[in-house]
Length: 273
Image (cartoon, rainbow, N blue to C red; front, side, top):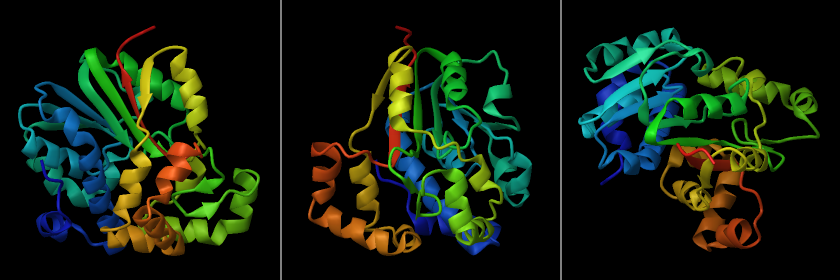
């Protein structure tokens, strides 16, 4: 199955995009999310939950392409996406709940639960994992995609981490606030929890059946070859990543040398050890 195309999404949602940089970012992230989640829905006929669904762009597209499933989006900031109310009101097979996942209560069980660039913002990633596991059906699976901080690198603002979060903020305060202002996500920096993949692995190995996708770096590096907005946002680093991908050096660095990659894709099945 083909991935979503930017031109298609832009034509469909352009009238709802008054803030060009922020909302083009939302479209690009919906494309990325679709490419990573579609495989779990192709043969599914069940219930799907997205945690941190934002304006519902991705759920809208998933419900159109995989209509046999029912969809629920949970987000504490649903009301901040008023300009997308036409989308939310037009979806027949998607429901939305304004809530933190930690406070979300339901008797439903879900066959697929996923979040994209959310787990690095929750108050406790351990509580997030425990909560989502409790919401899975017997054969369900939870997918977490998010930046990680095993390397001293911050992927939102694209800056090095100097010693710790507080010192990094003091050095890069202007750049951090400009980033938040441009995307309309004030307070983003304060919410980042500096989740580390090695800590997540240790936690789930003791409780759950989890698997990290060792090829996520290859797909993200490939993104630099065709997503000009993504490339431009990362500046010189994006150009370097593009070059490393072309000569396949990223595979040596992250697969052979086992250097931690600052992004993870994690699958956790509903199976208690």
